[in-house]
Length: 307
Image (cartoon, rainbow, N blue to C red; front, side):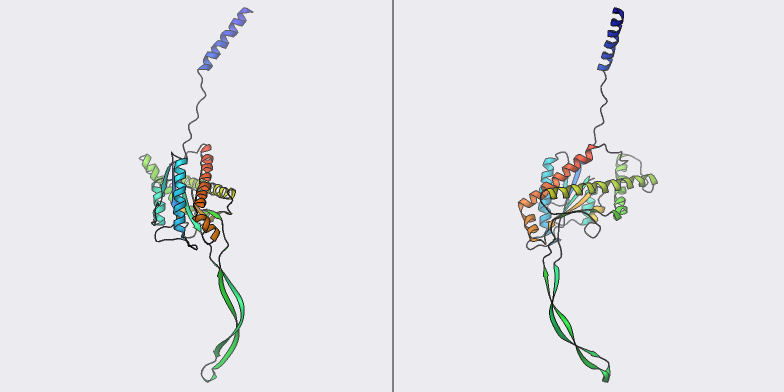
């Protein structure tokens, strides 16, 4: 019996010693998804943007962009925060996209202010007599007829609230071209191999990242509108747009959004966006959404990029 006990204790001791040297394999650290954020203040310089009763879009955009950037620099000390403009000048749309791509941005946030056209009204005001002629030569006759008369006037557009735009899905090919270009540049920077952008495998990777950037743009835009709504603003939701002024979103090879922070044509919105309180709150809401986005995108291991 003592032999069995001694043998058991010996085996247990050996197992204990061996397991004491075992350590659970550590998981590789998640590479940060966001290292550089580009903040774009819309319009500027000779381009005033939309006009309100007493202010211009360009000035509101710059004020909010600078406040947002300062908050982000404090919140994310390890992230590089860059601005397309920091004063009242006008970088072209192309130069803004080039700036973001050259600096290898991981997120592009464009700040804008919306505007709605005045609403036209036509009130019936009776009839007036109109003279006209028929026939030619000796058969030409003068005639009259009654035509309705209207009083025309315009009123302010009641549209108000926020909207966040992402690049339109039907612009995926255009977005993919810029992503392919960036992929090619980054591969060239890291290896001596020059990729063939027409190679099917390279194209497949480009399509994959185009889709991924679209999904991430939608994710962040949704979070921003949620933060506005929770903060008491009127949210008009996330939208896609491909007309003039939104081109910069498809030309930036990264997740990209354009935030319409309110309607300058709506006096209460204009007053809010020109106030320090309003600008601080807008910046806080956007910052809160970016914090949520950063946590969500960096929580799960990122797939191998291939560039």
